[in-house]
Amino acid sequence: MSGASWFKKSIIYHILIDRFAGFKSEKNWEKPDFLGGNINGIIEKIPYLLDLGINTIWISPFYKTTAYHGYHITDFNQVEPHFGTLDDIKYLISACHKNKLKIIADFVPNHLSKHHRHFIDAQTNSKSQYFNWFYFIQWPDEYLSFLRIKEIPKINLNYKDARDHIINAALHWLNIGFDGFRLDHVIGPTHSFWKQFKQKIKIDFPQAVLIGEAWMMGIKKSELKTINVKKKFINWLIGSASDNLFRQYVGELDGVLDFKFQELIRGYLINSDISEKKFKKKLQDHLNYFPENFYLPNFLDNHDMDRFLFLCKDNKEILKKAAKIQFSINQPPIIYYGTETGLSQNKSMWNIPSYGDLQARQPMNWNNPDKELLKFYKKLISDRKNIC
Image 1 (tube, rainbow, N blue to C red):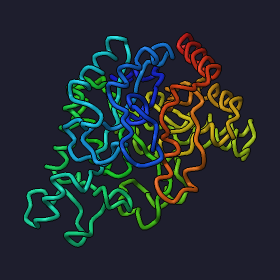
Image 2: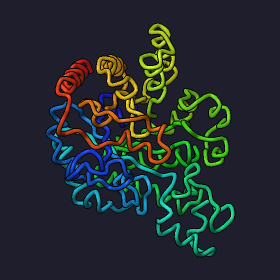
Image 3: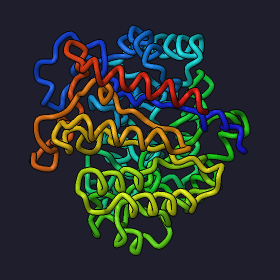
């Protein structure tokens, strides 16, 4: 097994920094603005996380950014002031390790904010040293980006200077103390990049875990030009969660997020598309398709999709059934913040023209948690730890 074998026993808690803890008011949460959640808020909630029983924290991007969610990065090596300081990050890592918690961070190598100083320089000067960092189709205003979102230009990771900058940023944060990364949009960079990325990371940090997000949900045919996977048109036709797509990262990463499990559990318990027998067969076939040392951390929902509890019409018995199945699988389970306290949403994100994803990113319900559901999750986690 790889040096990141510790990850096999992980029970992961997924935190969106701005919406988890530290905000002074929940007012205007439905607007795409900084609410006030921060690193110190997470530090203050470590006793809560320890009591819950999880052993690994995954935090959203904390790098300097123009967006509350952190994915529009303006500096990969600096901490966003809305979230805190470098000392706050160091203290959070130290506090986690002191309490025997691992901590991984969201890392975003494929793109950056159009307000990043390197892109500004490249867009205003065709002779810029950063011109080749990006994919200009017709300079200065036509360029490849993350899918169709012009706010976040795509980085040319085949260009050595750009590639080195991103890899060195990852090494910097591992040197600060992070235990690994959830790697955003791994289908964007080339497989060649990922091989180099893993090689460089594992030389100095063999125990660092590298988990990719390989998902093609919502991608339009015209956006395939921004994607770098084998047989991308076929994988796009097959659907968002493809085993063949996941397998492309065997040997390149330590694992990928298990979007297939999420798809199957929804089909079984919410949409009733498949019977219990068929669900079990499809799930087993899916899991058997991968090597034993390739991790497939599973989840019921995340920040990019409607919450599971909302989809099952706030029926907590269905949520509990899904969670039991999730925790029965021999792969690391992920709990999206608030699932354990009954946090839901008002309407589907897909029925809202702009910023619908905020529905699934509501502030943590510290003032009115479902205590019975929380108790259920504590026992579920405790039982899991006793078995592993």
